Image 1 (cartoon, rainbow, N blue to C red):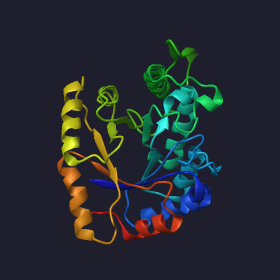
Image 2 (image 1 turned 60 degrees about the vertical axis):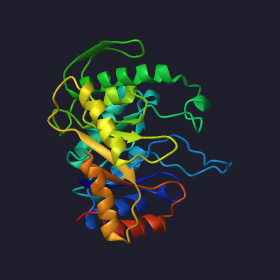
Image 3 (image 1 turned 30 degrees about the vertical axis):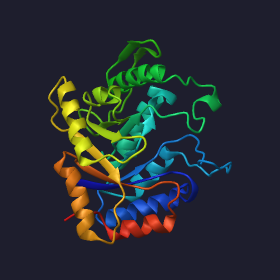
Image 4 (image 1 turned 135 degrees about the vertical axis):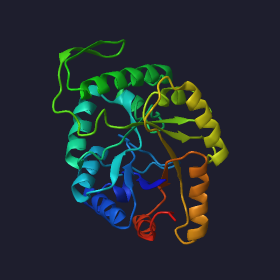
Length: 282
């Protein structure tokens, strides 16, 4: 199992220099990855406060320049609010900049903070699913470096070629997020490189992961050489034996990554302290 940090990109984490330094400290402390949320806007529950929000792609560029080893990426970027050709340029450039360390986490996103409706965008989840699947097709074709023509319901391309190609081949890894027990995101994930399961209302358990992975294996149409399974939560950082046992219980259920997941209520000092305590690894 590998271990990463997963932090918001607003409030105290909206400063690119601060976040890049946190990623450097995480690398020095033995973590394997550093991931950033991707929101265009964010509102705290029950608050009218306007938060400082950074562009996550600029943050990831700063992280790439301040680190040498750890993986990085968005967890997750909502594809329906992105132009797939713009994302194709950004992801390949970031993969080049990082020396082949980018992982692309994707999902539908939500309209919780008006990230679709406030900008006049479609809010229908079914349409978002169609856009996501078409975006993945367009994105991966553009990554190929070949000339691409595509006629979909939502996107159309005519004889477009994007160079350079990414360092990582056959493609930049794609992890698909979804809320269990909704099945569609997990059928989608089975066709790509990894899955980041979530659940509204409670934390997922190792037994949940066993059920999810059983479902994904039944949906896979091709044998993958590698498939990542991402578990997330918070460990104490102070009770090493308990933390290791907790992460290991998810590894035994099939998880390949543990994301130490921080939220809006966490301070910069709390995140930095947890980074320095190191990952819950034997």
